[in-house]
Length: 82
Image (tube, rainbow, N blue to C red; front, side, top):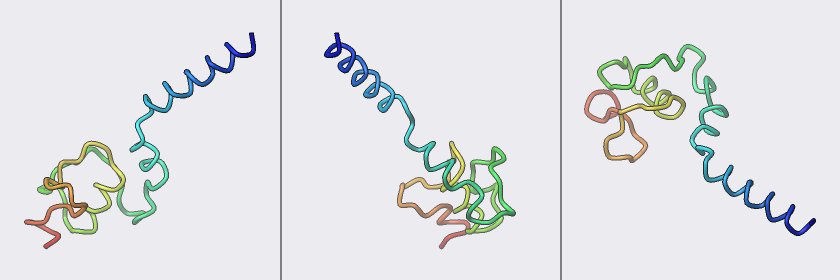
């Protein structure tokens, strides 16, 4: 009986680990630590930003942004962060 119980617990832990989106850890850990004047408000495009600092806050803290086309960690390279 205990052998099956441990196996089930391990199986459930693996499923939970795989199912949990690791990026949400970053979202909750970093939200609003960059600058308190910024907040995730649904904006996702460079054309909606007003500075490199704001765009950087958004890609590091907000889900679904579309500001880093080459995935190098620098957002809006043509508009703001050049």
